[in-house]
Amino acid sequence: MTFETREQEETIELGRRLGKVLTKGTIIGFFGDLGSGKTTMIKGVAQGLGVTELVKSPSFVVVTEYKGRLPVYHIDLYRIANSNELPEIGFEQNLYGEGISLIEWAERAGNLLPADAIKVKFEITNHDQRRITISNFNQLI
Image 1: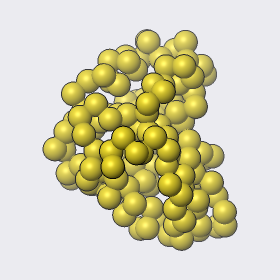
Image 2: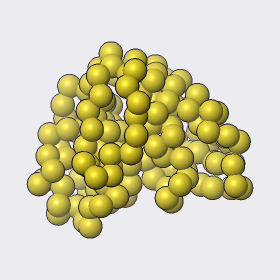
Image 3: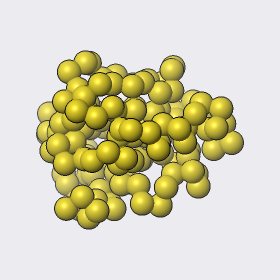
C-alpha cells in the first residue's frame, strides 16, 4: 500500500489509523532518511493505540515505553552502528514483549528485524510531501 501525504497532520492521521488496528506483538520497522517523517507517523500510531503522552524521538535513550491500550516500545536505532549492538540494549526482549514495537532506522537491525514485521518506507517527494509505502500490512486486514 502506498500513500502520499502533504503535511505532518496527514502523516499523523495515517499513523492513527494504523495504530487503531494493531494487535499485541506487532512489530513495525520504519525506514527513511533523516527528516522523512518516521517520528511524525509514530506519534500518530501511538495516538491510535491510546497513548496520551507526548511522543518524541528517543535518540539518546534508544528505547522509550509508552502506556496505551497496549504497551508501546518506541525504539530508535539511529545511534546503533550495527546489529551486533542490539543484544546489549535488550532489542529482542522489546520485540517479543507484551506490546507493540515501533522501530526507527529499522535497516540497522539487520537480520534481527523479523521477516513478518510491517515495513514502512518514507520517501521525500517534495519539501512537505512524502510517499509512504507500507508492506506486510495484509496480516492486519
